[in-house]
Image (tube, rainbow, N blue to C red):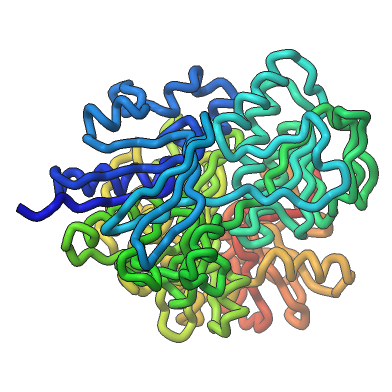
Length: 560
């Protein structure tokens, strides 16, 4: 009988355990060994902010299966028949000899592990910016359970009244809510012009305003210059001033951990992550890689990208296992589909942003569609602000973004499938989605957004972005900003220098509007704004545009 295949997997958090579990299912007699530098295995890293907040009560919940069994070395041995060497560091890959040198961190003993196939699932490493005094006590990353325990301990002692989060990406934003719920005064410092760079600026600004409404101070376009304190951090010096800080969370991002791969002579891709083919093979056919240490392919552009996500790591681990076991499975790439919770907002996106699409040379059309996420008369209907990015030449969907308390995740999942399938907005507009008042409007939000895009592409609607309107207001351009909402809506909130003519009165008051000026119409969501534009065009007004997204998606200050 042939010798059982020896599979060595370096990394025991996401992609590694997934690969190991699938290999054993396909080849029960394989000798599978997982090498993990840390003590804990297969933990839910994406759940760390919720462990910090107390939503997840106990550490073991992050380490357990859905039925509550903790995934420790005993579990992997008895249930999975996988040998786990935790608290063990992989030091060297001898590719010609097909072996890995490891060292037990408990006693320092070194040994060699032979392999037939090797899997690198070494993950990512949190970026620690080279800022003076970054090594002070009270400065944390949030990359592992140990970091989360440190933050929880400080919060439990009641010592963190003022907290500064450095970085406004997904980790920073998700952590914010946990700290606010713990009673902290939180400031986010982000060097870019916006938080959540995976969104377009105006969508990110809507999220920033929501965070500010919960007491969070958001400083964008500002660098951290240094940390201050005597042993313990006490202040953060930024380009916009000095902030008091009892605790700092570094959330600048992660970089792929490719040290082993590089020293072994494996090819590193243009993103700085390990280059793999669609079977998850590295430049060595006997070495596979998966998870946060590898680069993927952008399904829209076909270019390499580095988008570390737990969901991607698990899928890649499964593909690697299938191919190790003689299968022919393929991981085609990613769209960067992402969702996060920001207080009571769902923030989600997939595909290209408008900014990225324009930089890549696409002829871009966008559609903004704010509205309730289910029948408006249902008591639990919630606002959803949706944006589509469309290729003006082919009418194909390129990207989508959703912000608001409504169910944005399922609309972005639909958009991800549509982009993957190469669907046009015409096809999307007639998709057969489920409908019942408790779950969706009769015309789903994404169908409405697709129809807005079709109206623009067909020349039936000419839109103008809120940014352009704001720029014209700042420049005191001579144009008419026409609000066609009701007087009651206008009294509640309005835009500066806007003119109110309710839609129902527009035909009889149309003579009040100058035909020789540019007119921008809007309402709450710009449906009435669109109808007003059609009325004006029928009356031979030539320069009429509709403000995208209406007042619901206006990212600037409003008059109240």
